[in-house]
Length: 425
Length: 210
Image: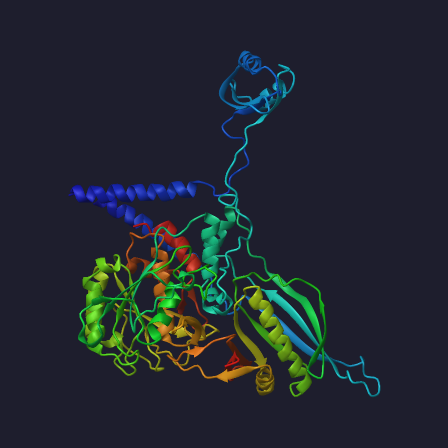
């Protein structure tokens, strides 16, 4: 039986489906047709406007509006021929009916240039100076996604939100590259004390910059989650020296993330670029899978770099999204852990921003491929903020390209179009 | 509940069509810039010539397009211009003598699509001719800067395997330094290049000045 709640969901779904169909029905390019069957009549400078109006009315037209120009001494009249014959009216009124009428033409459309009247190749390449070194973004069609969004005139509805569990996250104020950060401390047994953002090493800021660096601000690099808005970062710091990590702190941070979704801004992606160098990996841990399961139930998704030991990790895919690293040729990097999973992202020769003062650094590892996957989810979520990370991860996975080895690499362009069409609920 | 389920199923069916209808594979390179070096035999080779041998680096570019996806087709229906494949096009000739650039003749604009990625491929007529390799190295660096300026990220530089060591030495003479990519290690970065051999087997990362 349908209860009130079910009806509400039915109505919402019907509205969303109708909206999608309605959107699809409209051509995105406008046709250059006359607007609403009216004509524009311009009176002679210094002429008798009242006489012109009378002539038009007598000739079977309705005057809809008037724009007088005091300085020029003329008026513009919007007129509708009662018989609907626009062309006939234009031919009739052009200097023949009344000497007070200067010209008559069909009413034309006026729209802001660049919204629907798209240029053939919009410039969607960001102006961040290090962007040309970010081969990974182009490899995932990130720039094409920006072009598509620009063509459709769509911007991010809200800031993308990401959570990371790492060594901390420096604020980078130059060009407001990364300033929207909230940080909580879990290092040394702490239980999530709010603190001023800082990085106890360089790893956390580097990982975060891949996702959250502000795009198109003429500073450093482009962040994969940022299109036209900055990214909101929640950082759980689990190291005091940037190197040593206590597994219990990581587990406490992961659990806190699941329990404190509101503090993180709602359901979203949690990036954990940390792993065990030997088997079992995080994916093989029952405890971590249990946390990941609880996270999934609440719409959160834990994304984990598969590890840099070059191992074959035989544990099955469960609740964690494991991400392996690809090299510049879309081949699995030699250092990347592999196993019975297909998800991956670029992880070699990656440009990041980190250090004090902030500078461009280069690094390789699954620590960097994980955030490219997580950034994809956050990027998609910024267009449909009410959708959860699990669903968007599914969309990202389904729309992936296939590498020559048969693995999956995100295609941001396809994913964002799919999300705009089907990611509404 | 039934109607709600039906709507969900309808949406899922549409989604499946949308996703499965797109068999596009990830290309390993959207564009290729080819640098071919060769000694210009009958030129400037008079007795006691200080400009002989004259080396010419011919630089070509081409851009491939993948089969249009459903998304592309949908956008094209709505007026977006499809990406056009650019056949192999002569970009410029660079002339060298004794590792010094003598001249440039440019034939076209570099009209590759900004924001797309690709590779530089080196071909030399002789794998042991030091001067040819030097010319190839110099041309590579110039093209890299050209691509950088035009916002075209470079995946890697592909060098014939038997010229690989000479090529790396040539890059070092221009201030590039080898470095080993150790996972998890961060190194200062300026113009980090991935150089690999063809056939596969050798790979080297280099960055400028560190």
